[in-house]
Image (cartoon, rainbow, N blue to C red; front, side, top):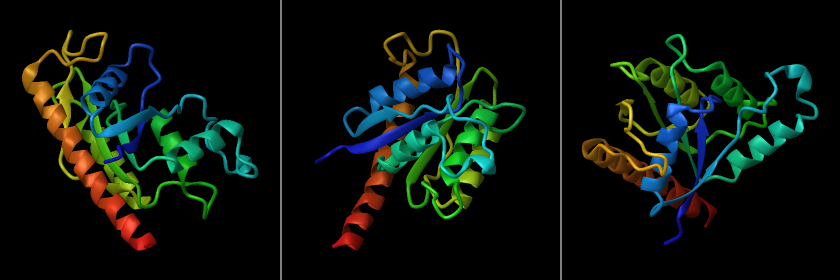
Length: 190
């Protein structure tokens, strides 16, 4: 069985991003079910409708990367009780120009981590609402990971066994969720 092409979008451009570390750990845990590719968003210009015709080269690359994926994994920090501006900008570019959105029908999952007790709960709620409105099929369930020092090593291995098991279940559930949409697309094309 072929692996699904997974686009991974990290909502942080911080060099030592906790969410990038979480994303890398998820990619490692899901290596048996997904062929993952990180989609760069930190080079996208701030969205401006004046720049839509033609879209800037980084935006064209970003939209092509989204369209080339079977499923999308969003891994986001929380900024001021919402999604980071960097991620919202990428979401907006993916939806534009009008009538040329790259999002509809894509299965998606949302997860995030921070050192806080409620992790990224509010940001994930906001992101789910935005993605659903744009036509993505967002997997239900919540996944809030409280990041602690040494939770994930330099090789992307989760050191806490209970967290590792939780994340493996999460990524396997997402693979099953994405497979349902792939089978629907195959049946519709036949």
